[in-house]
Image (cartoon, rainbow, N blue to C red):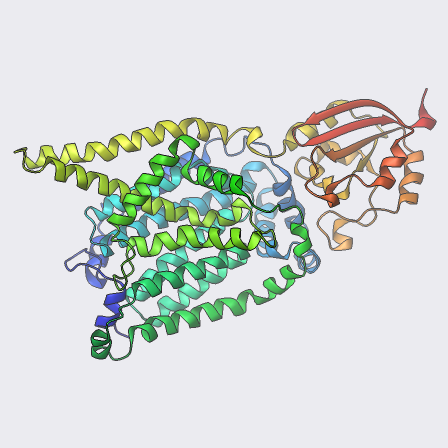
Length: 545
C-alpha cells in the first residue's frame, strides 16, 4: 500500500531531504554522524546503568525471579497455572540466563541493562523522527537529548539494575511507539505486523502496559485529518486507512495476550498487598519521574515548553512529538490510578514504560529554550556563529543544573537502602551464627524468598515448615506443613531460626498464629533486624543445657 496525501496528513512532516518524509528521513537517519545521536545515549546508559550493577543486594522480587526461573521449563509451565502467570514469559527468558550464567546479581541484571540501553537508543531515534515530523530545529540534537534525558533519570538506573521485567517492558513500549510512527508514515502491512508483535511483547512482560494502546489511540485521533474536502481527495477516508490496520494490529496482539490475561485474572489475589493510591502516591510518581524533588519545577517547565515546541495537540496536525508523547506520559498512569481507587492495582514500576515520553518532552523543551534564546538575540548585530553559541548556552546550563541535581539520587539508587531488603546481609548473619543441626522456620512461607538469593548458608538449615517443595506443589515458594508436623519437627531441633517481615504488606504476609504459639515457650537467644527482615534464634526447650 502506497502512502497518500491523507496518510501524510496523519504524520505531518516538512519537505526536504532528511526532514522526516519517507525518503528524506531515511537519507538523514543513515548518515554516520546522524547515528551518533542514537549511539551516544546507548553508551551513556551502558556506563550509568552498568556502574556498580552488582553492588546492591538482591531483594525479594529478584529472589522471586530466581525461584521462578531456575526450575525446569515444564515446572515453570506448571507454576504459572497456579501463580505468577503475569511473569511467566520473563521466567522463561531468565531460565536461559540462569542456565548459562548462574544467579549472581550481575548476571541476573544484565538482561535489564541491555534492554534499558536499547530503550534509550530507540528513544533517541524516536525523538529525532518526531522532531523532524514536528518541524523542529535540530532534530538530531532533539533525539540525542531525549536519549540522554532518559539515561540520566535514577529510576532508569534502578530498573536497569534489577532482575525484573520492567526494563524489557520499557524497551518494547518504545519500540511499539516507534513502529506506530513508521507504520502511519509508510502504511505498508509489514510495519503493522511489526507493531502488533511489539505490542504483544510489551504486554507479555507487563500486562499493565497494554494501557499504551489507549495512548496510541488518542495520538491517532488527534493526528488524523478531519476536513471533508481533504477526505474526498483521498482514495479512502484517513480514519479507515490508519485506524483499520491499527485495530487489526491491536486485535492480533490481544489474541496473543489472552491466555496470560485469563490466567492472571484468576490470580489477582497476589496483588492483595497493593494499597489504594492517594495524593502522596501521585507526588512520589512525579518526583521519581523528574529525578528528584528539586527538579520537579525544572522538568515540568521544560516538558510544558516541549509540548509547545512539538506543535501541541492540534487536531489534524499529524503524529508530532506532542501528539505522541503527551498521551503516552499522562494516560496510562491516570487510568491505572483511577481504576486503583476502586480496585488497587497501581504500583509505580507498572508505569515505568511511560518515562521515555517525559524524556521526549524534556528534550523538546531544551530545543525550545535554545530557539527562544536565539530569538531574543536576534537584531543585536551579533555574528550568526556567536549567536548560535549563545543560544546553545541556555539549554547547556539547564542540562548542567539537571545533571548536578541528579548526582546524589544516582548515587543513592545504588545503595542497599534503595531496595526494600538487604538479603545479602541476612545471609551473612545466618552464616556467621549458624551451628550444625540448626533448623529454620519461615513465618509465613512467603519469607522463604529470603533464602533464595544467597542460598549457601540456608542449605545447612533444615526447613521444618516445608510441606511440599516449590516444584512439587507448582508454586513459587512451596507450601506450609501442617502445624502438627511443624511441632514434631521442632521438638527434634536443638536451635531454630525464624524469618519474618518487619512490616507485613498484608495479612497473608503476617506470621501464622499456629506457628507463633509453638515458639512461645522457647527462649530467644538472638535477634537481628536487617532492613525489612527480622531474624530470631531460639533454643528449643528439650535441648537446653
